[in-house]
Structure formats: structure tokens, C-alpha cells
Image 1 (cartoon, rainbow over the protein chains, first blue to last red):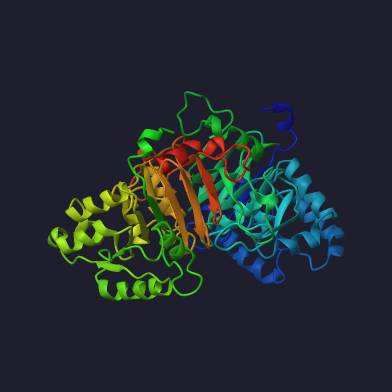
Image 2 (cartoon, helix red, strand yellow):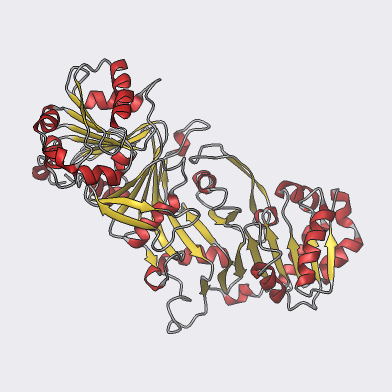
Length: 289
Length: 289
């Protein structure tokens, strides 16, 4: 682990699989508020993934009010032109945490990709803010974002299309509502087409907390499924569109809520915090600063 | 590959994921008839997994009639006592192929496990018959049979219970209706509890053909999913009943219909028939005579 690079991004990423509890135990949102520095810190809710931003914001305003958050701002865009609005940029600049809601990740990128809003989010992350995203907001986090995908029963050649995401993580593609919508075929379609990328599927009400250069933790109710096709043998190059690829040697890791891996863990501290050797490469890709 | 042991079982196993087409192209049933030596050979349909054996037999009688099978017999049991019936035993003894239908694998084993019928099926296999099983008939094939299993979203400790199967394959547990009923969590529950066993999930209208000591082939419409926990790191021993285990380094292989691996394939014959080194152990477990 290159500690000098860790300084490049000092914030946290909280990647949420959608449908996080907003009324009862609110484990994921509670942790988000903690990562922002507490309920008295300024938090921005970004609803640009949704065409009904006010409704979505009202829902989160109620949830964050329950958590005693006092300084909540709303960042919404209905056109990329608004991404130069000084009022919106100031809300992001001031925030200790940015929560990107669900909707459609393509809309989120159409509104913000390559704009000053995008730059301000990256800057907020670099200076230590917690960037959270749920559902579409989770998909948008990475360099390569799942823009379309339809594999139902088995992975298929041509079933998915990747687009440019916000680039806060480099080599990972995130999918959400994972166990609930049974999306393993879609995640396998991604690594079949792009074995250089890792796939991560997040269950509903479940979050992967990434502390760059440091560690990961799984929070909430379900699990996170990781698929690794780096050593996979596939025949996808010989197939026609729509055919099911043969995939030999996909590695799959299942991390239930409560899992915590820390790069700096003392080897004597207990096996739950140490990283198994076979998981080290994937761990490094996730936590790359 | 020990060729002397291959002689111990000269038949074939056809493990079918349920709901095989019985009206249109009938790819799986057609292959079964071929493996029996053709439509003029004696074939027995074993319906002991079902409480409505006559109805199930009538359905297969119609399908096999379409395939011009002329010598079809019915083997059904409503009590283990019937497993000593010389009339039923003669039908198995005469058959070049035995097709075990769906129903409940526990019923199939209650009726036949350890009885003369069970011995005759094993003897038929040893002398070269094709033993096919679909759905419950597929689950029953192995030494360790999935008797109960309920993992819905994620694998769970205690979610599955294995019982004794017919023992025609040693180290594999089969699950069926795999993609259609989204049974990966159940299959992962099996290897989480029993990492010494391999898990194989079969899609509907899809069959795994096992030629012991020789090779495997996938037939039909879908795919076969293989999971291998031999090198997995798991915390299941520390968990309570119902908790989701952490699983690091599960290996997953997806073999779509058309896949063919042959232990004796000429290395020059083309990459589709050669066995990737990382798949060799699993292949050996499946094809073990």
C-alpha cells in the first residue's frame, strides 16, 4: 500500500445498494451522518439522477431530520447548464457529505458529467468529504458505469453497456438491488465482456464503505457480492450477440454486513480484520486512493 | 485418469435441470434415447419420486412415443416393500436406459434407497445403461442429495440439509431449476457447509451428460453453473443459525449448452474440447468412474 498516494483522497465512499431504510433503524444513513462528522455538519443531497428531485429530496429531508441533521442542502439539476450555478457549487463546496439519490444513473451523468458540479464532487472527496450514492447514485460512482443491462437468466454477450461514470473508483463496476433483483447474470455479463474490471453487487439496505488506502466495511442488512474474472477463461470472443459465454474460473466473494477489512490491521488483532491473500488484489483495487 | 477404474462404470449419467422440453424439439430426451442405443431399445421410466406416478408416466409415454420409442416400461413404487418386486426389477434389469422423473427426491429415496431397486439401478449403470434424472431425479443421483434448502437472497448457515442419494456420483451435489428459481444462494449454502463437495446447478431444459472416465457435455437450452469452495475461506463455523457466511474465493464456472470437455481430446483438436487446468480437479470429480 503506497501511503503517499493515500493522501490524494482522504474522504470516504459509501456505496449503497438502494432501498436503504429511511424510517426505522436507518443503519446506513446513520453511518453516513457519522462519516460526515456528525449531525451538525453540512450535508448536500444530490437528486440529479431523478426527474422528480423535489419529491426525492423531501423523502431524504424527513429521514435526515429524524437523524437530527440541521444543515441539509439540495442539489438538483434539470439541465447540464445548471451545473455552472454558483449557488449549487457552493452547496457542494461547503458540504462534509454528499448523498446521491437513486433514479437513473444516465440522467445523473448527463446532468453532471464533465461539468463544474462533477469537479466539485471530486474536490469534496479529495478534501475529506464522504461521498455516498444509493442505487443509481451507487452505479455512478465508478469510472465505468453500468448504463444498460438486461441479462435475466444467464450472462449474455452484448447484454450490458458501460458508460462513463463519475470516476471516484477506477476498476470497479457497481450493480445494486443485487440479491433482490437477482442480478448475478448481469454482473457476470460485465466481467465476461470486461475481465479487466471487477464487479460488485450490492444488496438493498446494504452499503460498502470504502476508506481509500485503508480498508472496507459492509454495513446494513444484506451482503456485497464481488466477482473477479481476471484469471477467467472465456469463449466470449467467438460468440454471437445474445449467446451465453462459457466462463471458467470466475472468483466470487461474498461479504455480509459486519465484514471489516483493514489494510493496517495488526496481524494479531483477530482474523476478521485481516485480508485473505487471495482477496488482496481485489481489496487493493477497491481501496486504491 | 485411471483407465482401469473407468471400466467400473461404462454407462452414462444424464442430469437434467427439470422442465425439459417434451413437446417440441425435445433435445434432451432425444439425446437420452440415443444414449440408450436408439428408439428400439428397452427404456424404463422410474416415477417413484412422485405420488402421481401414472400421470407422470403418461406424460413421458407420450413424449417417448413421439421419439418412436417402442419398448417403454414403467417402474413405480408407493412403498419400499414393492422394491423387491421381481416384475419391477426385471424392467430395470432389461433396460438400456432408466429415466427418473421429477417429484420429491426424498420420496424417491424413501421408496428405493438401499433396496433391490437401488442395487439394480447401480448395476444397470455399471453394465452400460444410461441413467437419466430430471429435477428430483437429478438431485437424487449423487451420494449427497439436497434434501431441504431454503436460502432465498443470500446463503445462510443451516439453510440446507443433505441426505443420502443414490450414490451414482460421489462428490457433487446437484440442484435444478437453477437460473429459473435463482438458486445460487442455496448452492452457495451447500458449499459453505460442505466445502469438500462441489455444487452444480442445472437450468431447466438443460442437461449435464457425464461419461465417467471420459468427459462431460452440456445439452439443451440453458447452462450449468458449477461452484467450488475447496480453497474458500469462510467464517461459517463462528456463525449462528440463519446468519450469512463470509465466503472468500469461491470459484464459479458457467458452462452453456454446447460445452464439451473430453479427457481424451487431442490437444490439437481445438480449444473447445480441452480442459482448462483450473477446471481439471472439478472435471475429475464429475467424471470419476
